[in-house]
Length: 343
Image: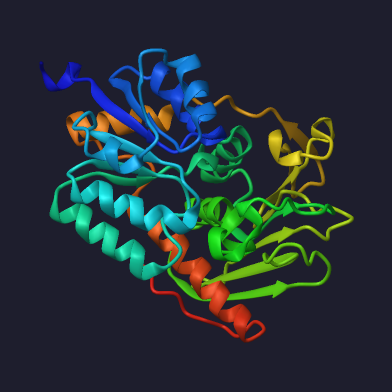
């Protein structure tokens, strides 16, 4: 079979909502075939088979990795096990797509990258929010110079609500409030703003929700060598929500307001983007519809033709470096920390 027509056999390691998303993407992407799914819960395996009736199922993930069925595995376990399962997969010669964050420490990220490179294997993180309609639209506006040079970038997620008691809300599993949503929003910051980063500060506040260990409110500030400043806030104590995006440029601004149609789950819908011009006029911008499953198509092109991907492993590694620096800063109530970056 030629490289151009080669079909890549994929396994899904853990099957929840994200696993279901990957299942649909694999089915819709020429060059990918779902060969196996592993999960300890038989009901989740049954859910996977609704979309892929012929898939081979495993209740033991190690057995799936040892089955010889896979060239590529998608790991969507909780973050504190990403390093373990990625290492197990790479050691067996299997290419890896990881859910974000890549791992919970920079040391683990660097070890995985070194292992993947030594075996000439793909190790990539599914930065799915890089392909959100609102972000794709906003990035193009900025790249096209619609608001001049960006010098201030603010992003926010949250509201006022009692956090769930699932792993997302537990520091030892998720990495904390900065890691949970920061894996998305800090990646977006790095995709928008180029250049060297001088320092990172972080603050975690625990004020009300004692049933979970994540901070109730977390702030991260990133200062670039150019003087550009970017911030990210994740809050469960925001009775008044800030806009998702508030971006200032030298000739205009972009505000991304949460769509009221989303109700209590604003992150489920793209933000409503408004561009504000220097002459005082403003215009609501229709979000561009991103190309469906472009990340997965990029994986096929990389594995078959070594075509560079729009998301890189180094970028996801640097996101972890920034979040780790922010957590270190938060331990000293906001002391400035210089992250160890590849960019």
